[in-house]
Image (cartoon, rainbow, N blue to C red; front, side, top):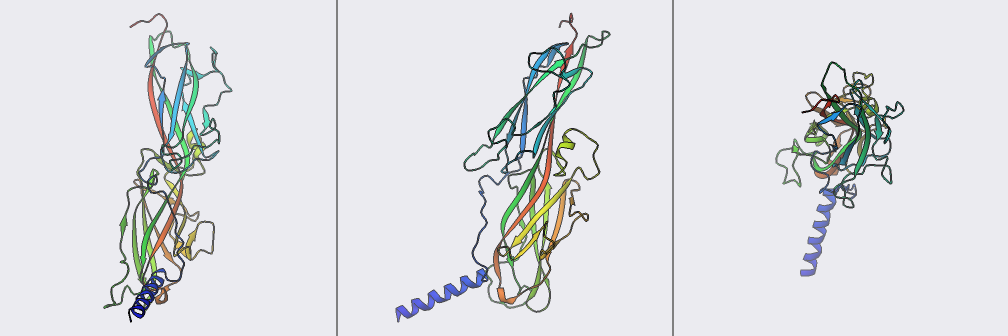
Length: 342
């Protein structure tokens, strides 16, 4: 009798587990939560800049760059650029006392590292990669009518980055049915603080849109926010933004939703797949989303209804967003004429 009772209990547990999985398998996306948190990306310090320097003097300026986020910057996906007031300063070669017109102000991130990429934080590399980029600067002679001139040296970092989030959402075809027995999950909104990147997914609101008895089309309203200390830029314009080239209107505050999926990918939006069975709203036909006041919302809804045969189920949802990001800093330098003291 005891054995029979145990068999019945085991069968019941197995049935419930199967109902919760909906027969869609148990594949799980995994992120290292310890490093996929916070709102940091690339940061840098300007090193070696003296507050005062004489005209016609060479000095070395270093930019110490850190990838404090959770994502790698691959070759060609990031740049740093130095901006000088050209009437008063120029780049030179090491040890030279003349301007070098062939010296480029823009450098590729990770270029000096072994794998030529600036890796983010991970289990194998908890602090993330850092790189030291050096510039040799020469001050030009200042106007003879002046004793000194105050100028700014600006440094900008521009790079491609991404944000991804894995969380649990509840899909409930019985959402509008009254008196249904206790369910394994509840349809609700969720809030988040950061995923190890300056653009953060801050909220997912889940709704079940009725398509008849025990039939719904899940809709997800995804809220994103620029939580970093820089600006979101178009992922394909990072070099142009860094060099202040002529920029189109969509150079800033543009993000690209790459994918949304749940139920182990049975339901998925893929930016590059026209046959996706989830459709999302965008700002234009290029599937771009514009941030306004550093925030944006994207609505995604399944094209076909989900019916009672899957039951009420808690399932993983994965969201991936691509974008570019830029951060700028500047420091003042006072250029003094020879023969001026104090």
